[in-house]
Length: 147
Image (cartoon, rainbow, N blue to C red; front, side, top):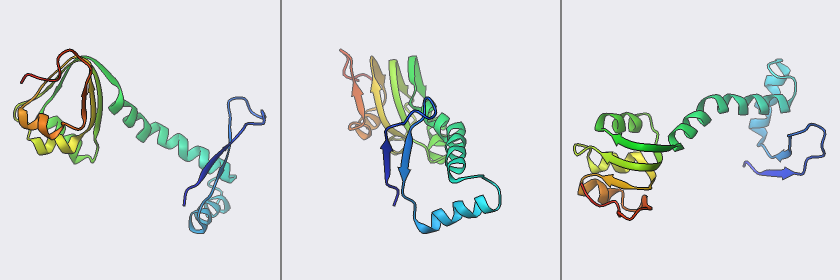
């Protein structure tokens, strides 16, 4: 039920925004229980702490997966299988050359890459390129051809 609405800041604290958030009774009850047990002082404290904790873990991983790579980016079967096993997907932006090793199965590549923008050249097997066809965007005079 998570409806979120941004409300213009009234300037109480510089750099902050006031938001309205709708929570279900069960979720709100859990937050209030944590407040009664003195884990948090108020609901805002719970929300801000939760956001900070995610910023430290999930958000950093997400940013790292989405960062632009300059130069040569090589993906091995072992690396892609470990990304897939962790339940992650890669969003790559590469200014340079991307190489996906020939022993990478098309299914592993398809399950691992969510999107890829390449600003130069890509080397991969024909099967991997076919599996990733809708997810690869080449912005180059070389249209991701070559193996």
